[in-house]
Image (cartoon, rainbow, N blue to C red; front, side):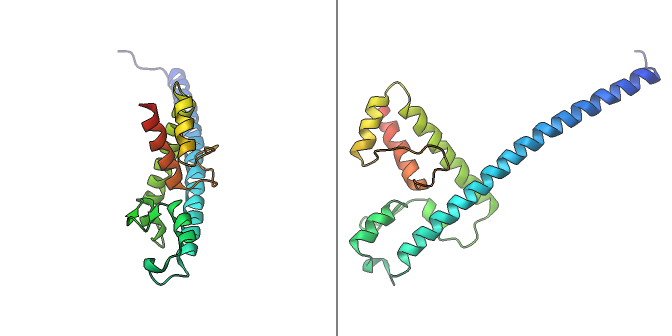
Length: 166
């Protein structure tokens, strides 16, 4: 095998350098997008946790919660009457969630949103929209980060759409 002459070696190094910088740019933009999504997820989680905790704040224990507040808490995944809690409730109750917990929260929320969107725009969209409407969801989120919908609601809509799709 021939050795590269000095000129070929320099050109080869330039190509590697150009490739490396291109690769780094792609990685940087991907990293920037992930960081942006992470920040948005943190914002959503903090917002939901604040709202959830604000609803519970006036009550000493769950037996004292009035009916109006029970309805509002169900949006977040807490059903006091049936003693059921959505997994996201655990994150609301943590004062400082870890980066991994926030990342998992974002991935699940985005997954549920994407699946919901696929079902709502798919072959059985009429059945899906009808099933959602029957369960009280007249609208669906516009993006995975739509703060008009709680994480629990998006997950619930995903399950409703999935079941209507079958």
